[in-house]
Length: 336
Ligand SMILES: *[C@@H]1O[C@H](CO)[C@@H](O)[C@H](O)[C@H]1NC(C)=O
Ligand SMILES: *[C@@H]1O[C@H](CO)[C@@H](O)[C@H](O)[C@H]1NC(C)=O
Image 1 (cartoon, rainbow, N blue to C red):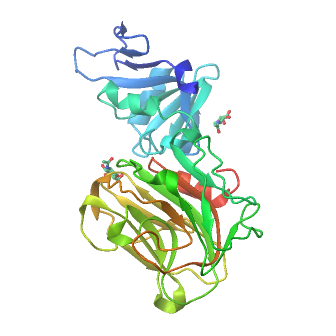
Image 2: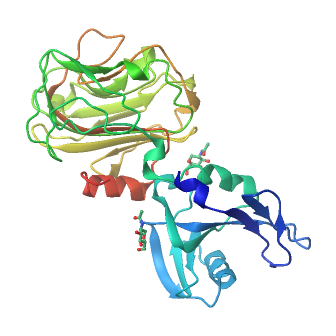
């Protein structure tokens, strides 16, 4: 895997000594200040760059990030003496953290090298993509995990936002049994495109079970002529409210929804706009239950609330998505 090609180490701000701890992890301690910072060679954050300037070395690049309140990390390209400043760090934007053989990545704030290790294992866009249903004439999961769906009722594959989509007639749905008892942990995101064609009642888009019977859900409501949409995750520290209930999505048009959770904050985006809701509704791990993921109906725990319309590009992640990643997925539905 790509991650094995990388060397991770941490360096002193004073550049005093390099102490090799293991084959992969090196730390350098500044014995004067006690501060440590981390660098990951052969990597960088794409998509969040706020500036690109000359810097004579890696240290100057890192220090200039420290002096800029908008900077959260840098990619330094030694061959070009180029310092790219990023608005996010690898923990904010794990999916944008990519292999870049020309670059050295350094977050602004890292006081502990261990904080780099999760990022190190985050390499590769697909590593936290647990399933992707593109609906190109079938219900296959296009990731290597092969968590394929199974339809009940008639599902067709008309044109969607990217290639084909799945169509639902108010009596059809898709279940994915491979998600039964799936441990999502405390970092989770779901992304989907949808076009609702019938205003009546509540209608489930994608979920792992219905409301508190489930683990998470994105569902449309009957409010304002069927234009309401909301969502939640269910954790052991869940306040038993539907933290997002947004009224804004027109019928008969394609819209994009992303719900993303990081263990203490739940965010809900509709068409690339962050919605207002109870973002601190939930903390800790999402509850794992013996229920499938359902697309096109309210899910296990409710017999009805079927979807009428079209759903496309459903993606389920065990990572948090940052605003830059949401923006990219909204603007480039076929590539991101
Ligand atoms: C990231 O950006 C660099 C420089 O623009 C580019 O060479 C590289 O291909 C990009 N990597 C990915 C995975 O997008
Ligand atoms: C979740 O994100 C918020 C906002 O960025 C941050 O304050 C919080 O510490 C994060 N929680 C975890 C557990 O990472």
